[in-house]
Length: 308
Image (cartoon, rainbow, N blue to C red; front, side, top):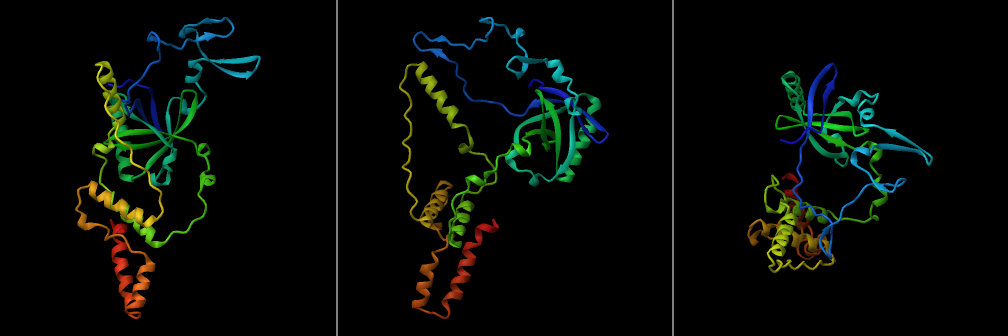
């Protein structure tokens, strides 16, 4: 059972739901320590007081704010817990909004909110049912670790999840990162949609969504421990230069279909041909009738990815 990170209540209107907060995620990555390579002695970080030039115990360490070079204001954990804020002991719901209205870049780590005791069961379930039927999420304020935060409440398998959120003014303006102006043809856009369709799936189950880095690191550690030869790294593919965007899209669709076990007979029939080629062919053979036929063919092939 994960340890309780914080305990308090969810508050919306006059309804109060006592809850305990637990982490919703686990870190399975391999952790390393620092060692002196000459004798493999452990290298540790020691906490030393600059004035007394001695190592201090954790019980002697507290928080402080540097008001000026000559004045430090000490702040205790008890004082942080007793902040004069309504969010210091409660997650205050401020509004209910559609999830689509929140930019995912604001959403951070997640926590499970567990009802605290029998008295919390009914209001907890009430909030779960209301969120589920409304198809909305709650935006709330709460105060942990010495700062007030913005949070998002949603339901996952009948459990309320709290996601930490960044304040809107903490999100940098991306406009300075925009690429220079370029022109795209409709064929290139339809080709990208065909590639997206060939790579679409219903879930994230599969070996490509597993942590291959941790598995590879575990194999290296085991090989070194047993004094065996290290596993060989796969040869990286040569990154090619994109000279023809449509050719790159065509080849990408073929590779995506091949990786999913689809036959080569499908090839690139969903990808539209270049417009210039179509116009030249039409002009040579049947100037009056060919354009209408080509337009219909393009619509049938190009629109298929959009409807998926």
